[in-house]
Length: 158
Ligand code: FES
Image 1 (tube, rainbow, N blue to C red):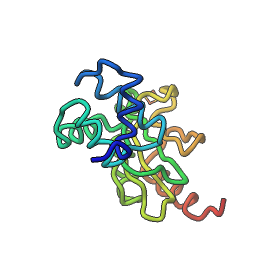
Image 2: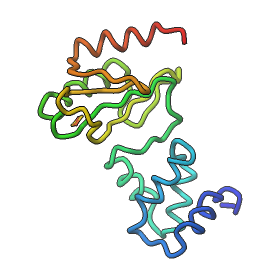
Image 3: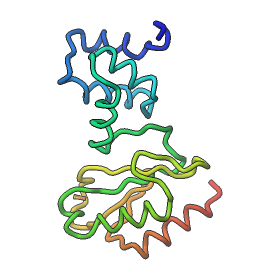
C-alpha cells in the first residue's frame, strides 16, 4: 500500500499522534465527517495504523450502525432508534424502510436516490416514532405512512 493510498492515516496521525485501539471510533467518525463515508481503503489504512485486523474494524464499525460505506443518497433517510421511538415501534418502521428501499442501514440504493441510517434520539420524543429525510421530519410514523412517504419521494423530480 503506497503512501498516497493512506493519505487518510497521515491526516489522522496529525490529529491523533498517540492513537491506540481506543481511538478507533473517533478516527472513523473523523474520516466519515470529512468524506461522508468510509471506503475499503480507509478501513485498511486505519487497520495498519492501529495494527488491527480489517475484519475487526468492519465488525466494530457495522455494530455501531453510524457509519456509511457508500456515498449518501440524494435523500438521506434517518430512523430514530432512541428509547422513546423504540417503545413506540421504531423497529417496525425500520423494517418497513429496509423492505421499501431494499437496503440496510449504512447503504445507498443503486440509483443513488436513497440512503438509510439509524440515529440516536432526534429530540422529538413526544412525537415518536420519528424519521427524517434530509432536514424534513416525519412524526408518529407507521409502516403504512412510510410506504406513502417513500412513494412521494420516489416520484419527486427535485
Ligand atoms: S427517542 Fe426518538 S426522538 Fe427521542
